[in-house]
Length: 148
Image 1: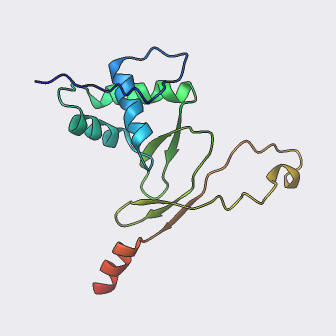
Image 2: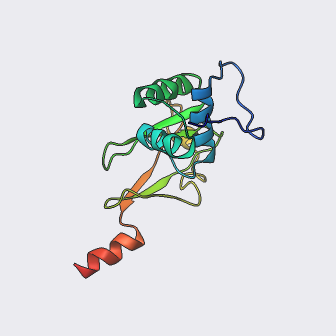
């Protein structure tokens, strides 16, 4: 069995954390992801892409908890199905439209709250962040529903 390699020279790993092979693999998957991923999706990608990896899903959850404690990932629970997903904290945020049928997550092109100054409108309340999810059906699922 070939040894897996999760180290990429072009990825700079954040300081302040011991970077084990497993943590590097999880970080690499998150770095390459185009949408938030569940722990099981991360596990499946590591199993698929890194031959010889021998991880348990529980290891992925522990690594994600550590990343969350260090502010490296954002954890979100999608209200439609309760799925918990993770994405790297890149200093900006993305809102998603979530398909109720296939659970595809489509990133919105911009933040609908970008023009709103919530800190001025809320008086004694300081806004530190926000999340927005839109629910509906993607184009493919809309077409399938019409055929039914």
